[in-house]
Amino acid sequence: MKKTTQYLLGLGALVITATVLVSADHIDAPSTAGTTADIADFYAFEPTEGSSNTVFVVDLQSDVLPDLAYGTFDENVLTEINIDLDGDLVEDQVIQAIPRDGRMYFFGPITPSQTGLSSMVYADAALGDVEISGTTAIVETTSDGVSLFAGPRQDPFFFDFFQFNAVISPDLNSAPGGFLPPDEAVDTFYGANTLSIVLEIPNSMIGTPTATNALGLTVYKTWVTTNRKQ
Image (cartoon, rainbow, N blue to C red; front, side):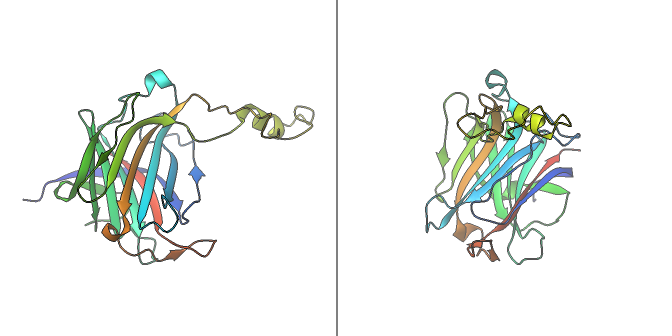
């Protein structure tokens, strides 16, 4: 019998259509802010030029302090990487991650039986699992050449939040010089962590990329969603 667990209510989505483009969406979704369903960043890129692998990185729950960042993945939240192979903006392959008892379990890539905001865990398409890291990073590599990681990482988003607020303030004298140069700007997020889910996977397991980015490179059209168990 096919083992599935129903997950409903997709809580967040973030689209990337380029190999090296990066997006950030920090603590601004009211229904998910401050939880591990809150998508902070999503990256998709080749690990080296000309590689036949793709690395996917999903950062959840930004702005958590280092001493609070360990072991806080929510077992009721399913993270799903969606991949469109034919340009219709509907997922043709999905890769899933869900934590259980201190480990992150990965499933897929698999053609989903349903698309959109509702999903289910495809337990019969196990990809591998890895112990959720603490202070030391732990990476597992499967016999298929898939590398897996889950755990806290320093927030990669560099942003001088207070200077930004001064620039946009109605008080024109609060930041007369505008934004500060890089050597003077303060990274407000320095020392804070995100909870990261990372996998490097051979493209042959996903399918042929068909999208073209702004640089004229052929890439996967991909986005990530989080779904909470109902």
